[in-house]
Image 1 (cartoon, rainbow, N blue to C red):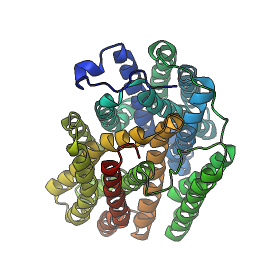
Image 2 (image 1 turned 30 degrees about the vertical axis):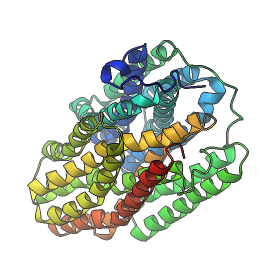
Image 3 (image 1 turned 30 degrees about the horizontal axis):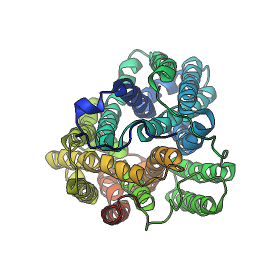
Length: 472
Protein backbone atom coordinates (compact mmCIF):
# COMPACT_ATOMS: atom_id res chain seq x y z
CA UNK A 1 0.00 0.00 0.00
CA UNK A 2 1.26 3.45 -0.90
CA UNK A 3 0.14 7.04 -0.37
CA UNK A 4 -2.14 8.01 -3.23
CA UNK A 5 -0.22 11.13 -4.25
CA UNK A 6 3.50 11.66 -4.30
CA UNK A 7 4.69 14.80 -2.63
CA UNK A 8 4.47 17.56 -5.21
CA UNK A 9 4.87 21.26 -5.06
CA UNK A 10 1.24 22.28 -5.04
CA UNK A 11 0.53 24.66 -2.16
CA UNK A 12 -1.21 23.00 0.77
CA UNK A 13 -4.63 24.48 1.54
CA UNK A 14 -7.99 23.35 2.86
CA UNK A 15 -9.42 23.44 -0.68
CA UNK A 16 -6.61 21.25 -1.97
CA UNK A 17 -6.99 18.88 1.00
CA UNK A 18 -10.65 18.24 0.16
CA UNK A 19 -10.17 17.98 -3.60
CA UNK A 20 -9.37 14.98 -5.83
CA UNK A 21 -11.88 12.76 -4.05
CA UNK A 22 -10.36 13.19 -0.59
CA UNK A 23 -13.43 14.76 1.05
CA UNK A 24 -15.31 11.45 1.58
CA UNK A 25 -12.22 9.82 3.08
CA UNK A 26 -11.66 12.83 5.30
CA UNK A 27 -15.28 12.68 6.53
CA UNK A 28 -15.01 8.94 7.25
CA UNK A 29 -11.80 9.41 9.23
CA UNK A 30 -13.40 12.16 11.33
CA UNK A 31 -16.43 9.93 11.99
CA UNK A 32 -14.13 7.12 13.13
CA UNK A 33 -12.26 9.40 15.52
CA UNK A 34 -15.58 10.71 16.83
CA UNK A 35 -16.80 7.16 17.57
CA UNK A 36 -13.61 6.28 19.41
CA UNK A 37 -13.46 9.43 21.53
CA UNK A 38 -17.15 9.89 22.33
CA UNK A 39 -17.87 6.26 23.18
CA UNK A 40 -14.81 6.04 25.41
CA UNK A 41 -16.27 8.72 27.72
CA UNK A 42 -20.01 8.17 27.46
CA UNK A 43 -20.10 5.95 30.55
CA UNK A 44 -18.94 8.85 32.73
CA UNK A 45 -22.54 10.03 32.97
CA UNK A 46 -24.63 6.90 32.36
CA UNK A 47 -23.04 4.52 34.89
CA UNK A 48 -25.25 5.63 37.81
CA UNK A 49 -28.29 4.66 35.71
CA UNK A 50 -26.64 1.42 34.62
CA UNK A 51 -25.78 0.56 38.22
CA UNK A 52 -29.30 1.29 39.37
CA UNK A 53 -30.85 -1.01 36.78
CA UNK A 54 -28.25 -3.78 36.50
CA UNK A 55 -26.54 -3.63 39.89
CA UNK A 56 -22.79 -3.86 40.20
CA UNK A 57 -21.91 -0.41 41.50
CA UNK A 58 -18.54 -1.80 42.49
CA UNK A 59 -17.68 -2.40 38.84
CA UNK A 60 -18.13 1.16 37.61
CA UNK A 61 -14.47 1.61 36.77
CA UNK A 62 -14.42 -1.57 34.70
CA UNK A 63 -16.73 0.08 32.15
CA UNK A 64 -13.84 2.38 31.24
CA UNK A 65 -10.94 0.07 32.10
CA UNK A 66 -12.27 -2.81 29.99
CA UNK A 67 -12.97 -0.49 27.10
CA UNK A 68 -9.44 0.90 27.30
CA UNK A 69 -7.82 -2.56 27.35
CA UNK A 70 -9.71 -3.55 24.21
CA UNK A 71 -8.94 -0.26 22.48
CA UNK A 72 -5.19 -0.44 23.17
CA UNK A 73 -4.86 -4.01 21.91
CA UNK A 74 -6.91 -3.22 18.82
CA UNK A 75 -4.97 -0.04 18.07
CA UNK A 76 -1.68 -1.87 18.40
CA UNK A 77 -2.73 -4.62 15.97
CA UNK A 78 -4.54 -2.39 13.46
CA UNK A 79 -1.52 -1.87 11.22
CA UNK A 80 -0.86 -5.57 10.72
CA UNK A 81 -4.55 -6.34 10.21
CA UNK A 82 -4.81 -3.65 7.53
CA UNK A 83 -1.95 -5.38 5.73
CA UNK A 84 -3.52 -8.82 6.03
CA UNK A 85 -7.09 -7.94 5.05
CA UNK A 86 -6.74 -4.65 3.21
CA UNK A 87 -7.69 -1.28 4.66
CA UNK A 88 -11.22 -1.13 3.22
CA UNK A 89 -12.26 -4.61 4.38
CA UNK A 90 -10.59 -4.28 7.78
CA UNK A 91 -12.22 -0.90 8.44
CA UNK A 92 -15.67 -2.22 7.52
CA UNK A 93 -15.21 -5.22 9.83
CA UNK A 94 -14.08 -2.94 12.67
CA UNK A 95 -17.33 -1.02 12.39
CA UNK A 96 -19.30 -4.28 12.66
CA UNK A 97 -17.35 -5.28 15.79
CA UNK A 98 -18.28 -1.92 17.29
CA UNK A 99 -21.94 -2.52 16.36
CA UNK A 100 -21.86 -5.89 18.11
CA UNK A 101 -20.41 -4.42 21.29
CA UNK A 102 -22.96 -1.61 21.39
CA UNK A 103 -25.88 -4.00 20.84
CA UNK A 104 -24.58 -6.29 23.60
CA UNK A 105 -24.41 -3.40 26.08
CA UNK A 106 -27.81 -2.07 25.01
CA UNK A 107 -29.50 -5.44 25.54
CA UNK A 108 -27.52 -6.53 28.62
CA UNK A 109 -29.75 -8.05 31.31
CA UNK A 110 -26.95 -7.98 33.90
CA UNK A 111 -23.73 -6.09 34.51
CA UNK A 112 -21.36 -8.86 33.37
CA UNK A 113 -22.74 -8.84 29.82
CA UNK A 114 -22.75 -5.04 29.82
CA UNK A 115 -19.05 -4.96 30.70
CA UNK A 116 -18.27 -7.61 28.07
CA UNK A 117 -20.00 -5.36 25.56
CA UNK A 118 -17.77 -2.49 26.65
CA UNK A 119 -14.64 -4.58 26.01
CA UNK A 120 -15.91 -5.43 22.52
CA UNK A 121 -16.71 -1.76 21.92
CA UNK A 122 -13.14 -0.98 22.91
CA UNK A 123 -11.84 -3.49 20.37
CA UNK A 124 -14.06 -2.10 17.63
CA UNK A 125 -13.32 1.54 18.34
CA UNK A 126 -9.61 0.86 18.74
CA UNK A 127 -9.50 -0.78 15.33
CA UNK A 128 -11.58 2.04 13.84
CA UNK A 129 -9.22 4.68 15.22
CA UNK A 130 -6.13 2.67 14.26
CA UNK A 131 -7.35 2.14 10.70
CA UNK A 132 -8.14 5.86 10.51
CA UNK A 133 -4.48 6.58 11.26
CA UNK A 134 -3.45 4.08 8.58
CA UNK A 135 -5.80 5.78 6.11
CA UNK A 136 -4.24 9.15 6.87
CA UNK A 137 -0.77 7.75 6.23
CA UNK A 138 -1.66 5.88 3.04
CA UNK A 139 -4.27 8.05 1.34
CA UNK A 140 -3.20 11.65 2.01
CA UNK A 141 -0.13 13.48 0.65
CA UNK A 142 2.38 14.55 3.26
CA UNK A 143 1.70 18.23 2.58
CA UNK A 144 -1.80 17.76 4.06
CA UNK A 145 -0.89 15.80 7.17
CA UNK A 146 -0.78 18.83 9.49
CA UNK A 147 -4.31 19.89 8.51
CA UNK A 148 -5.67 16.34 8.67
CA UNK A 149 -4.17 15.85 12.12
CA UNK A 150 -5.46 19.25 13.24
CA UNK A 151 -8.96 18.21 12.17
CA UNK A 152 -8.65 14.85 13.89
CA UNK A 153 -7.37 16.57 17.02
CA UNK A 154 -10.27 19.03 16.86
CA UNK A 155 -12.84 16.26 16.48
CA UNK A 156 -11.26 14.45 19.43
CA UNK A 157 -11.45 17.57 21.57
CA UNK A 158 -15.10 18.19 20.74
CA UNK A 159 -15.99 14.51 21.28
CA UNK A 160 -14.41 14.45 24.74
CA UNK A 161 -16.73 17.32 25.67
CA UNK A 162 -19.89 16.08 23.96
CA UNK A 163 -19.54 12.36 24.77
CA UNK A 164 -20.41 12.68 28.47
CA UNK A 165 -23.15 15.20 27.63
CA UNK A 166 -24.75 12.69 25.26
CA UNK A 167 -24.67 10.12 28.02
CA UNK A 168 -26.23 12.61 30.40
CA UNK A 169 -29.10 13.35 28.00
CA UNK A 170 -29.95 9.66 27.66
CA UNK A 171 -29.45 8.98 31.36
CA UNK A 172 -32.29 11.37 32.20
CA UNK A 173 -35.30 9.19 32.79
CA UNK A 174 -33.22 6.01 32.70
CA UNK A 175 -32.91 5.80 28.89
CA UNK A 176 -29.25 4.81 28.91
CA UNK A 177 -29.78 1.83 26.59
CA UNK A 178 -30.85 4.12 23.77
CA UNK A 179 -27.42 5.77 23.96
CA UNK A 180 -25.77 2.54 22.78
CA UNK A 181 -28.34 2.09 20.04
CA UNK A 182 -27.32 5.51 18.71
CA UNK A 183 -23.64 4.52 18.71
CA UNK A 184 -24.56 1.21 17.05
CA UNK A 185 -26.32 3.11 14.26
CA UNK A 186 -23.31 5.41 13.77
CA UNK A 187 -20.97 2.41 13.69
CA UNK A 188 -23.14 0.58 11.16
CA UNK A 189 -23.16 3.65 8.91
CA UNK A 190 -19.38 3.83 9.25
CA UNK A 191 -19.01 0.15 8.33
CA UNK A 192 -21.27 0.41 5.28
CA UNK A 193 -19.55 3.55 4.02
CA UNK A 194 -15.95 2.38 4.45
CA UNK A 195 -15.68 0.19 1.31
CA UNK A 196 -16.96 3.04 -0.85
CA UNK A 197 -15.20 6.00 0.76
CA UNK A 198 -11.77 4.41 1.05
CA UNK A 199 -11.45 3.80 -2.68
CA UNK A 200 -7.97 4.47 -3.97
CA UNK A 201 -6.23 2.06 -1.63
CA UNK A 202 -3.50 0.16 -3.41
CA UNK A 203 -2.96 -3.25 -1.89
CA UNK A 204 0.63 -4.18 -1.37
CA UNK A 205 2.00 -7.60 -0.46
CA UNK A 206 0.27 -9.29 2.45
CA UNK A 207 1.79 -8.56 5.83
CA UNK A 208 3.99 -11.17 7.49
CA UNK A 209 1.35 -12.17 10.06
CA UNK A 210 0.20 -11.22 13.55
CA UNK A 211 2.79 -10.56 16.30
CA UNK A 212 1.04 -12.76 18.85
CA UNK A 213 3.81 -12.82 21.46
CA UNK A 214 4.05 -9.03 21.62
CA UNK A 215 0.25 -8.70 21.79
CA UNK A 216 0.04 -11.19 24.67
CA UNK A 217 2.72 -9.36 26.66
CA UNK A 218 1.04 -6.04 25.82
CA UNK A 219 -2.28 -7.44 27.04
CA UNK A 220 -0.68 -8.48 30.32
CA UNK A 221 0.94 -5.06 30.79
CA UNK A 222 -2.18 -3.07 29.93
CA UNK A 223 -4.27 -5.40 32.08
CA UNK A 224 -2.03 -4.79 35.09
CA UNK A 225 -2.35 -1.03 34.58
CA UNK A 226 -6.13 -1.29 34.17
CA UNK A 227 -6.42 -3.23 37.43
CA UNK A 228 -4.16 -0.65 39.10
CA UNK A 229 -6.60 2.06 38.06
CA UNK A 230 -9.42 0.40 40.04
CA UNK A 231 -7.35 -0.78 43.02
CA UNK A 232 -8.12 1.11 46.21
CA UNK A 233 -4.77 0.68 47.95
CA UNK A 234 -2.18 3.19 46.74
CA UNK A 235 0.75 0.82 47.31
CA UNK A 236 -0.91 -2.00 45.38
CA UNK A 237 -1.90 0.43 42.63
CA UNK A 238 1.63 1.77 42.22
CA UNK A 239 3.00 -1.79 42.27
CA UNK A 240 0.68 -2.84 39.47
CA UNK A 241 1.62 0.25 37.46
CA UNK A 242 5.30 -0.68 37.88
CA UNK A 243 4.61 -4.24 36.72
CA UNK A 244 2.67 -2.91 33.76
CA UNK A 245 5.48 -0.54 32.75
CA UNK A 246 8.02 -3.38 32.96
CA UNK A 247 5.85 -5.49 30.67
CA UNK A 248 5.42 -2.59 28.23
CA UNK A 249 9.20 -2.20 28.14
CA UNK A 250 9.44 -5.94 27.50
CA UNK A 251 7.17 -5.51 24.47
CA UNK A 252 9.70 -3.07 22.97
CA UNK A 253 12.57 -5.45 23.65
CA UNK A 254 10.79 -8.49 22.24
CA UNK A 255 9.53 -6.57 19.23
CA UNK A 256 13.02 -5.38 18.33
CA UNK A 257 14.15 -8.99 17.89
CA UNK A 258 11.01 -10.47 16.38
CA UNK A 259 10.52 -11.46 12.75
CA UNK A 260 6.92 -10.21 12.79
CA UNK A 261 7.01 -6.77 14.36
CA UNK A 262 4.21 -4.91 16.13
CA UNK A 263 5.95 -1.52 15.95
CA UNK A 264 8.21 0.25 13.47
CA UNK A 265 11.91 -0.54 13.39
CA UNK A 266 13.72 0.96 16.44
CA UNK A 267 10.45 2.29 17.90
CA UNK A 268 11.93 2.04 21.37
CA UNK A 269 15.09 3.96 20.46
CA UNK A 270 14.87 7.58 21.60
CA UNK A 271 17.58 8.48 19.12
CA UNK A 272 15.10 7.98 16.27
CA UNK A 273 12.20 10.18 15.22
CA UNK A 274 9.66 7.42 15.85
CA UNK A 275 11.09 6.53 19.24
CA UNK A 276 11.21 10.13 20.45
CA UNK A 277 7.77 10.87 18.99
CA UNK A 278 6.07 7.90 20.63
CA UNK A 279 7.79 8.68 23.95
CA UNK A 280 6.57 12.30 23.85
CA UNK A 281 3.00 11.25 23.01
CA UNK A 282 2.95 8.62 25.76
CA UNK A 283 4.40 10.80 28.53
CA UNK A 284 2.44 13.97 27.75
CA UNK A 285 -0.86 12.08 27.51
CA UNK A 286 -0.17 10.30 30.80
CA UNK A 287 0.56 13.61 32.51
CA UNK A 288 -2.75 15.12 31.41
CA UNK A 289 -5.23 12.57 32.76
CA UNK A 290 -5.80 13.78 36.34
CA UNK A 291 -7.67 16.95 35.38
CA UNK A 292 -10.51 15.28 33.45
CA UNK A 293 -10.94 12.44 35.96
CA UNK A 294 -10.68 14.17 39.33
CA UNK A 295 -11.39 17.87 38.82
CA UNK A 296 -15.22 17.43 38.59
CA UNK A 297 -15.72 15.77 42.01
CA UNK A 298 -13.16 18.11 43.59
CA UNK A 299 -14.99 21.20 42.26
CA UNK A 300 -18.34 19.81 43.35
CA UNK A 301 -16.94 19.39 46.87
CA UNK A 302 -14.93 22.60 47.25
CA UNK A 303 -16.96 25.03 45.12
CA UNK A 304 -20.41 23.51 45.56
CA UNK A 305 -20.82 23.15 41.81
CA UNK A 306 -23.43 20.96 40.19
CA UNK A 307 -22.14 18.12 38.00
CA UNK A 308 -23.21 20.10 34.92
CA UNK A 309 -21.25 23.24 35.86
CA UNK A 310 -18.23 21.20 36.87
CA UNK A 311 -18.45 19.59 33.42
CA UNK A 312 -18.42 23.01 31.80
CA UNK A 313 -15.21 23.88 33.63
CA UNK A 314 -13.58 20.66 32.40
CA UNK A 315 -14.90 21.45 28.95
CA UNK A 316 -12.45 24.36 28.78
CA UNK A 317 -9.72 21.80 28.11
CA UNK A 318 -11.54 20.29 25.13
CA UNK A 319 -12.55 23.63 23.64
CA UNK A 320 -9.01 25.00 23.94
CA UNK A 321 -7.62 21.81 22.38
CA UNK A 322 -9.90 22.22 19.35
CA UNK A 323 -9.29 25.96 18.95
CA UNK A 324 -5.52 25.58 19.25
CA UNK A 325 -5.44 22.73 16.73
CA UNK A 326 -7.13 24.81 14.06
CA UNK A 327 -5.12 27.90 14.98
CA UNK A 328 -1.83 26.25 13.98
CA UNK A 329 -3.09 23.95 11.20
CA UNK A 330 -1.58 26.12 8.45
CA UNK A 331 1.87 26.42 10.03
CA UNK A 332 4.81 24.99 8.12
CA UNK A 333 8.58 25.11 8.18
CA UNK A 334 10.31 26.05 11.41
CA UNK A 335 7.05 26.82 13.19
CA UNK A 336 5.93 23.22 13.35
CA UNK A 337 8.93 22.41 15.56
CA UNK A 338 8.29 25.51 17.66
CA UNK A 339 4.67 24.56 18.26
CA UNK A 340 5.68 21.06 19.31
CA UNK A 341 8.00 22.56 21.91
CA UNK A 342 5.53 25.24 23.03
CA UNK A 343 2.83 22.59 23.44
CA UNK A 344 5.09 20.24 25.36
CA UNK A 345 6.26 22.98 27.74
CA UNK A 346 2.64 23.99 28.34
CA UNK A 347 1.78 20.61 29.91
CA UNK A 348 3.96 20.83 33.06
CA UNK A 349 3.22 24.56 33.23
CA UNK A 350 -0.52 23.85 33.36
CA UNK A 351 0.03 21.16 36.02
CA UNK A 352 1.82 23.66 38.27
CA UNK A 353 -1.01 26.19 37.79
CA UNK A 354 -3.67 23.59 38.61
CA UNK A 355 -1.79 22.26 41.66
CA UNK A 356 -1.65 25.82 43.04
CA UNK A 357 -5.14 26.98 42.05
CA UNK A 358 -7.26 23.92 42.88
CA UNK A 359 -6.92 23.84 46.70
CA UNK A 360 -7.55 27.60 46.78
CA UNK A 361 -10.60 27.22 44.49
CA UNK A 362 -9.21 30.02 42.30
CA UNK A 363 -11.72 29.39 39.53
CA UNK A 364 -10.25 31.73 36.93
CA UNK A 365 -6.86 30.06 37.27
CA UNK A 366 -8.39 26.57 37.26
CA UNK A 367 -10.14 27.34 33.97
CA UNK A 368 -6.97 28.88 32.54
CA UNK A 369 -4.89 25.91 33.67
CA UNK A 370 -7.32 23.46 32.11
CA UNK A 371 -7.46 25.49 28.90
CA UNK A 372 -3.65 25.62 28.72
CA UNK A 373 -3.55 21.84 29.18
CA UNK A 374 -5.91 21.36 26.25
CA UNK A 375 -4.16 23.94 24.08
CA UNK A 376 -0.87 22.14 24.69
CA UNK A 377 -2.13 19.17 22.68
CA UNK A 378 -3.88 21.31 20.10
CA UNK A 379 -0.62 23.14 19.41
CA UNK A 380 1.63 20.10 19.28
CA UNK A 381 -0.23 16.91 18.46
CA UNK A 382 -0.67 17.30 14.70
CA UNK A 383 2.98 18.20 14.18
CA UNK A 384 4.23 15.30 16.32
CA UNK A 385 2.05 12.89 14.36
CA UNK A 386 3.19 14.30 11.04
CA UNK A 387 6.87 13.98 12.00
CA UNK A 388 6.40 10.37 13.05
CA UNK A 389 4.55 9.49 9.85
CA UNK A 390 7.10 11.26 7.67
CA UNK A 391 9.86 9.18 9.24
CA UNK A 392 8.18 5.82 8.53
CA UNK A 393 9.52 3.58 5.80
CA UNK A 394 7.03 2.11 3.31
CA UNK A 395 7.38 -1.21 5.13
CA UNK A 396 6.43 0.35 8.48
CA UNK A 397 3.85 2.88 7.31
CA UNK A 398 0.76 0.89 8.34
CA UNK A 399 1.98 -0.38 11.72
CA UNK A 400 3.70 2.92 12.58
CA UNK A 401 0.67 5.09 11.91
CA UNK A 402 -1.76 2.83 13.78
CA UNK A 403 0.65 2.74 16.74
CA UNK A 404 -0.04 6.43 17.35
CA UNK A 405 -3.51 5.53 18.66
CA UNK A 406 -2.22 2.69 20.84
CA UNK A 407 0.57 4.84 22.31
CA UNK A 408 -1.86 7.62 23.23
CA UNK A 409 -4.34 5.26 24.86
CA UNK A 410 -1.63 3.39 26.73
CA UNK A 411 -0.38 6.72 28.07
CA UNK A 412 -3.92 7.55 29.15
CA UNK A 413 -4.18 4.26 31.06
CA UNK A 414 -0.85 4.79 32.82
CA UNK A 415 -1.64 8.41 33.69
CA UNK A 416 -5.07 7.50 35.05
CA UNK A 417 -3.56 4.79 37.25
CA UNK A 418 -0.80 7.05 38.63
CA UNK A 419 -3.26 9.87 39.29
CA UNK A 420 -5.57 7.36 40.97
CA UNK A 421 -2.82 6.15 43.27
CA UNK A 422 -1.96 9.75 44.17
CA UNK A 423 -5.62 10.53 44.85
CA UNK A 424 -5.98 7.49 47.10
CA UNK A 425 -2.86 8.47 49.06
CA UNK A 426 -4.48 11.89 49.57
CA UNK A 427 -7.60 10.24 51.00
CA UNK A 428 -9.90 10.29 47.97
CA UNK A 429 -10.92 6.63 48.38
CA UNK A 430 -12.10 7.31 51.96
CA UNK A 431 -14.59 9.93 50.81
CA UNK A 432 -14.31 13.57 49.79
CA UNK A 433 -14.21 16.19 52.51
CA UNK A 434 -12.79 19.68 52.16
CA UNK A 435 -9.46 18.43 53.47
CA UNK A 436 -9.19 15.35 51.23
CA UNK A 437 -10.44 17.29 48.19
CA UNK A 438 -7.76 19.97 48.67
CA UNK A 439 -5.03 17.36 49.15
CA UNK A 440 -6.21 15.40 46.11
CA UNK A 441 -6.27 18.62 44.08
CA UNK A 442 -2.56 19.05 44.72
CA UNK A 443 -1.17 15.53 44.44
CA UNK A 444 -2.94 14.37 41.28
CA UNK A 445 -0.96 17.07 39.47
CA UNK A 446 2.35 16.97 41.33
CA UNK A 447 2.56 13.18 40.93
CA UNK A 448 2.62 13.38 37.13
CA UNK A 449 4.88 16.43 36.68
CA UNK A 450 7.87 14.06 36.17
CA UNK A 451 5.96 12.48 33.29
CA UNK A 452 5.28 15.93 31.86
CA UNK A 453 8.97 16.83 32.04
CA UNK A 454 9.88 13.52 30.40
CA UNK A 455 7.45 14.40 27.62
CA UNK A 456 9.10 17.81 27.19
CA UNK A 457 12.53 16.17 26.90
CA UNK A 458 11.25 13.70 24.31
CA UNK A 459 9.49 16.46 22.35
CA UNK A 460 12.67 18.55 22.19
CA UNK A 461 14.58 15.46 21.13
CA UNK A 462 11.96 14.73 18.46
CA UNK A 463 12.21 18.20 16.94
CA UNK A 464 15.99 18.17 17.11
CA UNK A 465 16.17 14.83 15.31
CA UNK A 466 13.63 15.90 12.73
CA UNK A 467 15.47 19.15 12.08
CA UNK A 468 18.66 17.25 11.40
CA UNK A 469 17.08 14.41 9.42
CA UNK A 470 13.47 14.90 8.35
CA UNK A 471 13.09 11.27 7.30
CA UNK A 472 15.05 9.83 10.25
